[in-house]
Length: 327
Image (cartoon, rainbow, N blue to C red; front, top):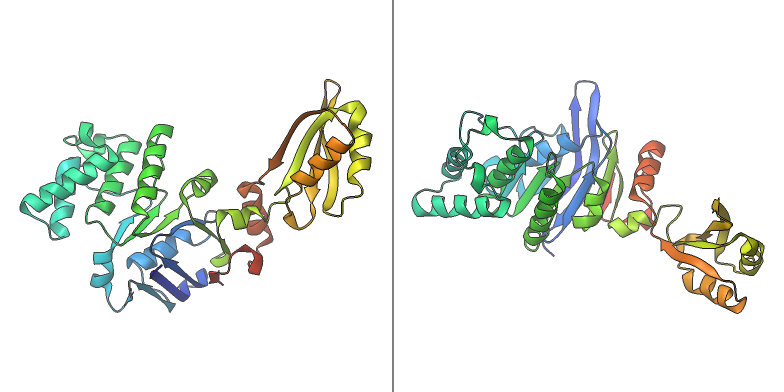
């Protein structure tokens, strides 16, 4: 994969405030990076530097080989940017606004019309095309913002909360669109919706206090959950001791915890050592001891738990959770 975005020690200060603290990473064509962090972490500031809206205090950012500070016009030709809030001219209709954007991007005549029609179809704007933007719902305003970012078919898409304000069906549509576009683009999505990361992102980066704390695939990050690959077993309460005795001899089992007891049944969470997959070993013990099982499944862990752990502990990532970025 070709590297499209390269950050080296990217830093931004606003007076005494260190908003972005030495972020380094690369993002290649074909990757969708979920950019995560609590409010005030530095996500939007980083994205604004990439888009050329504000200059770094130090460090560099390159888009398709062009430095964002030294070659701002070349950079802007290659990116589509959806900022937070999707600002637009409220008294313009969606159609006239997209026409204005097309002209700014250098399109006119039949090509301008073709570009507008293509993005209107992709984000399903047809029914409100001739309404003033200020009269549109939050969801439709967001879709107008998506359309303008995509209109010139850029190599890079930088989107701040792209599904904000959309209903579940619209979110599904936009996620499908992002997956479709990611084949030949590098895409950065800032989001607070962790399920969106698992749904569309090939990588996830977590920042807090301006520092990059984790960078890896969603599965890499899930592996940091305390319940990753834990086996959740429901058996009759009378069988609890038999299960515990049977699993005591397995070196791969770290702990067994009762998480629920009701209607003469118990739910046991069996956590593995080093996140190893222990489901087959547990099943072998259950079968050998002929213990009746009500239910059994493997827990994949929770990105929400990992996010809280990383951002609260505020410790940079170790080699296990990525390796494509550093702080």
